[in-house]
Image 1 (cartoon, helix red, strand yellow):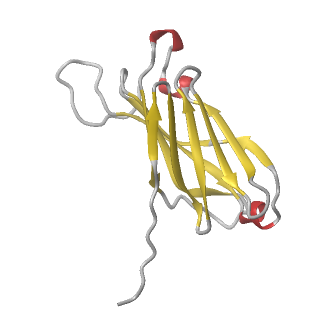
Image 2 (tube, one colour):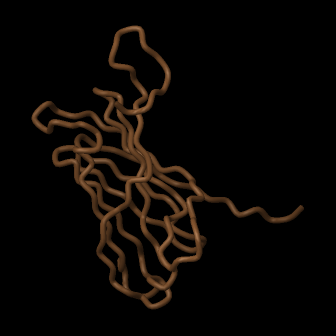
Length: 151
């Protein structure tokens, strides 16, 4: 029987903080952090020699329609996504991180803009995450159901 690689991700949360992992390319994964108090989503990728070398950031509050004073309630998970397009050096990562605000029913997907050269050259990178999707999973009107496009 041939060997099939097994890939696993992890997600956890405590109080006002969530953490998740997801693959960036075939050889490395990212760790994502979401601070519920600020809406700051951050990610970091390990280099081959010197610890973390790539850092990414995004504030999700505007995308998700969050007013921080109203105590937002978040969920965060990662998922596989082959969003690669064209032959450019910078491509979306192999996974996305989904952040949902359950009070208003909005979810957004974010990807890391990635180049294998970052890992190969052990380059330190700091840049924003890229939003790749936005939708609602809860209808505003009572009795509504299903997934709907954002307003």
